[in-house]
Amino acid sequence: MDWKKQLPIWKKQKETEWLKETYSQCLQQAVLNLSPAFVNFFQKRAGYPQFKSRHGKESLQYPANVKIVDGAVKFPFLGEIRANLHRQFDGQLKTVTIAKTKTDKYYASLLFEDDKPESVVSSLGKAIGIDLGLTHFCITSEASKYDNPRHFKKQERQLKRKQRKLYRKQKGSNSRNKARKLVAISHEKIANSRQDLLHKLSRKIVNENQAIVSENLNVKGIVRNHNQALAISDCGWSMFLNFIEYKAKRDGKTFLEIDRFFPSWKTCSVCLNIVDSLPQDIRSWECPHCHTRHDRDVNAAINKRDEGLRLLASGTGATADGGNVRPNRGRKSSVAVVPREVRRLHSALWRV
Image (cartoon, rainbow, N blue to C red; front, side, top):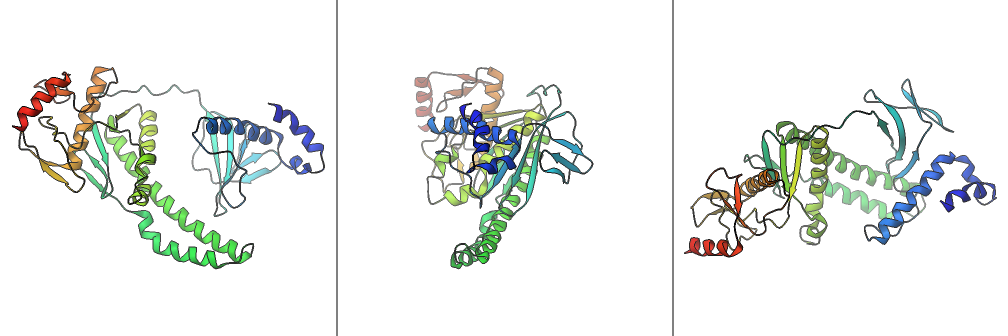
């Protein structure tokens, strides 16, 4: 708040007269955005706030006084700017954020308040479990497998060639700026291809199911494995789950994430027997108790679906720890909690 009071003073100073060229509420909004940035830094969720680079993504936020006219958006100080409005908007316009990408493209994000009631979330209907991987990007409990397109891998050779040309250019020259834009175009093409796949696949899954169950992945910890960090980052697992979550919430459907330590990949989905170990290179295995042959990924997706149904039925939100559940000899989604000692005894008997 103290910095907001300083803005009129800074506008009168000769060194910062350029502040007069910007709408006053945009400057105030920039000061307000600085507060959560420092909060995230002190709570160790982000790095120290830095000044924006002119070579990166730039943004400007208008908290009020923006209007939509025929085929354009009217801003204070800027006037009317032609825009491609892809749909009709209902409600009161609250905030508009203008963003400029590294490829010199401008986008406007418009926030409306429509006063419509939120959709009532329901879990009655078809349920599905999904498992994410590298060879196959998404595997469902219905044994559907969607291949990983490896967007970065397809463009890696061309991207390297453009980056080599960029590094040879002299700093500050126009040729370097042109080369930098070519590299940015390649990165943008990869990102757009990835988001197109994630949007289409998440839309398909949400449309066909009422309840979607996945695993609470720790992607930040997984990418510490430098052997697979690039391949994992190229998949966009977190983005995919975020897309499913907001689309399910908007459509009144249920999206549930079970605990990441739930042993879905080494638990038999038929008898719930847990094997001691299951290395990553084993993609199919046979249960030593019921002798059922399992596909590793499909079996994990089925277990996640059943565990999600158990949590929804119980209403407690307590996930199973290390397989502390056993079927009640009925539906697999109806399970009962048993003591850990009994589970160990049963596992020992099954192994014998």
